[in-house]
Amino acid sequence: MLLYSDIIKDDHPDLRQKSLPANIPLSNEEINVLKLMNDYLWNSYDNEIVEKYKLRPGVGLAAPQIGILKKMFCILAYDEKGDFHNYCIINPKIISHSEEKTYLETGEGCLSVDKTVNGLVHRYRRIKASVYLYDFETQELISTVLKLEGYLAIIFQHEYDHLYGKLFYDRINKENPFFIPENSHPVIFSPQDE
Image (cartoon, rainbow, N blue to C red; front, side):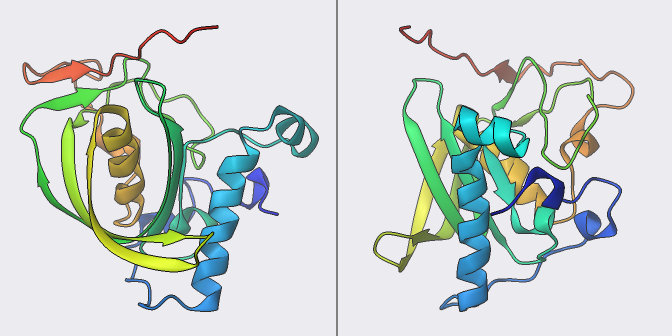
């Protein structure tokens, strides 16, 4: 089981390296890395496990964050409408994006960053990405094009940056951290029924 302490922090040199493509088909080691990352995210939704193992909850985790410089990451999150999404993504390539940008009003966080970093990260509102998806139930690797927008597009781009040695705070405007360009609008989450 992957623990929060196993996730490397932002002072580690691996987080500034570019990752290599994963093998297609995936090696057993690469499948195990995907499983570790995906299991961590699932466990971080379970309050009992979070408390017992002192996990920090997350919505995405990239292989470089556990010291594996391969182009792989997992996403486990609810979108703005409350719909649930789980992706294990291999060798992603963003092939198109909107001019319009979006951001989280509270800023972004990262399992590899222990400190609070104030400022807004403006990312593409919509993206289209060529990816391989791994399905643990069928043990199949599927080549597809993902079309994501809003919150999921933000998570995807945040994890994608890890594959190229970038951290979210690299994208914050240093002169004016809360600057909002005209073409950027916040992600609005629908109120959830209690």
